[in-house]
Image (cartoon, rainbow, N blue to C red):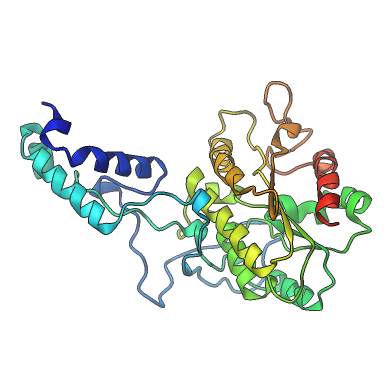
Length: 338
């Protein structure tokens, strides 16, 4: 049977929906729907976030998924409208009516062939993660109020650990600069977005920002609330952070680093997600306000292997790793801060 000839509307719709499905935004099965959103004002069930230098001690508050953040068009996932989903479902019904085996499956598993709306992308929301609750966030807000910051570092543990593992290297390369580091171990794009909007992005005007965020979005952060994002979803989250920084710091030059490689080699699933995100966030480079730089290959050997000498846990740099990082960005940062 020639499906396209019999149902000409189906072809373009299927293209749209399949493209979105590959990006992780469409589910064509009622058996794999995302969990329902909590009612307004009611937090979904959650648990602790990770990170050795996280948001501070004290009672653990539930995570409440916040409002969506704007996303640059360059990294926005193509999502079908409600009308397009309705058209697709109508076309599928007509197609299923001609196929007895499909009708039998539909009768056995109600909703199996129903096109579901795409899930919301939590990576591009203003969500207060556990890492941005408590003393660390409050300290960043107070530091922001003091001003006199020329260079801002922001991200997750990989950037946070400039203050521990990377401290001697930091002092060597950046110690003479007016630097603030607002990165928190274990944090994600949504947490960084929330922090910027809630005091960490106000009160000062840096000349330059070094940003790397997204590797923790590859998993759920040890919670029952946050999503394990796809590469395109991570890219939307990173894009939203860049957009928020441009709003908060209109005069700053942003050095947007590709998410670093992780795992032993290219077969690592988390590394693959990061690479997929990197291909998309590279589009944010404009050479005027945002400067994308991929220094990931500098951490790898000739075979693309990440060694424990450079990243002992195959995620966080050693002192030698921080030396590679500093050497790779020092000239660019000096240029951006002029």
